Length: 111
Length: 116
Image (cartoon, rainbow over all chains, first blue to last red; front, side, top):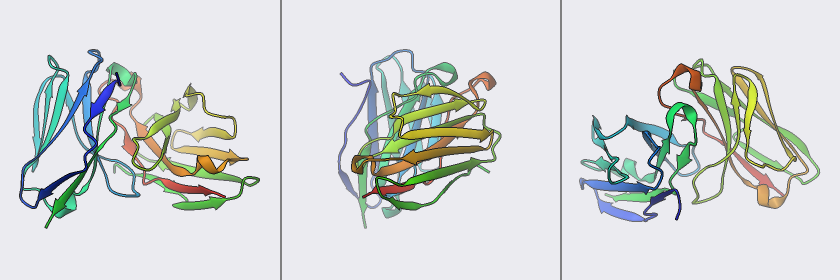
């Protein structure tokens, strides 16, 4: 079993749709959870990070963490073609230990 | 300023060449990283520097040689690479573990390396 799993997609949605991206993980020691967006041929860009369980909202993006289920989600409301990218979840234990990426989900938002 | 810069953007080199990749950040971060990313794969950690000292080497071949001249700069020296080393090389930085808080990493745009 991989430490972090993520549906690779590709996921295609129409413009304006609500997108749900998810990761599951096996290491209960993870406490910090991040979502990165990576456009083709570019470096990953940090979108959001959350600590422990709960929700965090930033504009059209909402991150959710459920540590009891070892499951994290990123929701994108009113999706735009410019949201088309690969979305990588990442997580780490305290103080920089064991930073791990998920394999990434490719998202296409169709105009 | 949350910018990490990398030069060059593109690099083509032969197997006998020696070249260097450069990375710079001015966020006061004390941890810097090199990653290698192949197409449609997540980044793979290569090296971690913490307070200018190499703290993690993920069993990377010696043809890759990292260097951290100061807290803002990170280099990756390349020598006798193989075609399979062609990839996007990403630099990242984060607060030092001693600062507490999440090890949130900020990435540069990468150097696309092609080895002929």
